[in-house]
Image (cartoon, rainbow, N blue to C red):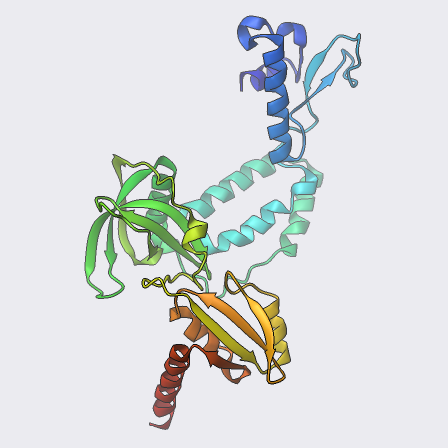
Length: 330
């Protein structure tokens, strides 16, 4: 950051001779640092931070005085070719509408627009219509902004949180201290993976954010578990629910509608999807450690899917259909 400040103070150009050894160390260390800095800046911004030029600002060649100069527009908020990032993120932020995260992004966007030229602002306005997320079915988190902000801060600082929440199983109010591990987005909703603070053998537990009635960041720091990985937690689950018995269910579905078959093949449903044929019909085999979410998912396809197995899933769906039929005939 000192180097960037000096480049700016020197009208975006500084001579290598001005980079004195007491400030930057040996010449080889300086060059190593500059290379890494430029590489990292290029990776994140798509353009280099600086370039090596001669005294006339042209590309440097051996034998000429050597200068570092800020690359054209390197400190701009964005480049025109990257403008699509912002409207795309604005659509994503609809899930977080009314929370501090959405407001913070709007502030960053406003600050970025102030640094754009007229051509860039016009390009941004034109791009805003090219990305759209309807937001239908998303949960309303505007009432939970305080909880999301506390969770966000606790995640970054690795501090425990004290929460008051409603139990999923009993509906009673629970107060507990948790270690926040991962904020998860799934099916237009937010979930928090935690571990109990003082449990000698803690296991990751998932919570719906809207079930938190209050969240407070404590001063208690914790060591983020080295062996915990969210991708492993969700590797064999069909959705958010994990089975507790260690059983992996092999679900086989006969596909009775061509359009449904195309829809299924265009998506991933489990960690080991397989397609095969039986009785002249295409079939899907998927694997999961819980049937809780599979039942409602299969029922959503109506008569276009036939459950071949497991028998447990067939029985659950048959029971549900009978209950629905009795309600309709009542």
